[in-house]
Amino acid sequence: MAEADMGQPSTLREATTRALAASDLDEKVRLTNLACRLWFARRLGLHSATDPAHPGRPGRPGEPELVSPKKLKRRSVHTPEGRIVLIHALAHIELNAIDLALDIVARFARETMPRSFFDGWMTVALEEAKHFGLLSRRLGELGSHYGALPAHDGLWQAVEETSHDLSARLAVVPLILEARGLDVTPSMIDKLLAVGDDDTAKILEIIYRDEKKHVAIGAKWFRFLCARQNVNAAERFGVLVRQSFRGEIKAPFNDRARAEAGLTPTFYRSLSPRSR
Image 1 (tube, rainbow, N blue to C red):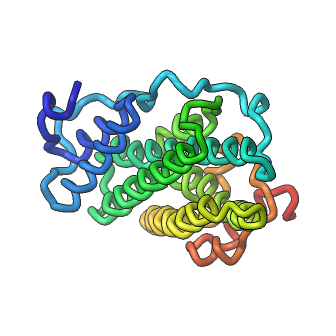
Image 2 (tube, helix red, strand yellow; image 1 turned 135 degrees about the vertical axis):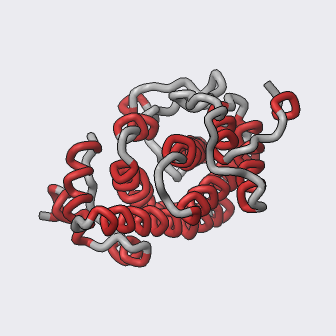
Image 3 (cartoon, one colour; image 1 turned 60 degrees about the vertical axis):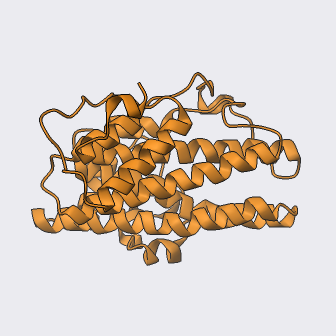
């Protein structure tokens, strides 16, 4: 159903649920931008009893095909085809990141949190939509499009594992998954520059700067919840990650960027087998 048929949303939870459920990606981005615009104009309440039900999973088009990560191609940057594979994989990550930001608002809108908590995550949603647009356009410039290659569903599994607990969600999504981007993106930028793909490198530089802010937002609110519960933040992080994250915490770490985002080594080094 088109936005014009539904009318404008009256609450942030309704607006983010609509965007989350949208299967057309242009519509998802449009609804995300609308939710941000209305929220920051203070034209939305937070939630109401008439909000639509959470969709359970984000809306998606028929493509890309979702497969096991083991079946995905390697991301070489030394050929045009390899760069398309890399950019497509990054676009898929950024699309999931839009939904991750929308979901934390839609799913936890009834939590007793300051309004600035929701300001932060709507800013994240807006910037993730920007990243997806930049990468999608770059794919078009290279003769491809998002959906042309298979992708995997691992990021949304993290949502399902942490759907019950806001602290767990903050620990796993911004402080594990997004923080990983701080570790690997600088080397990707260097490799792209080395093969002369300055345009893609510039996009990744934008993403890297924004993702540092996103990790900082996650760290801020994780520490807020720990202080409210009177628990040690680093210790609580370790417990939640062991309970709710199935993957490996991989070294090497970009300690400087992580620290600038408020994520110090006491949080993560004891969780990585290679760092002990």
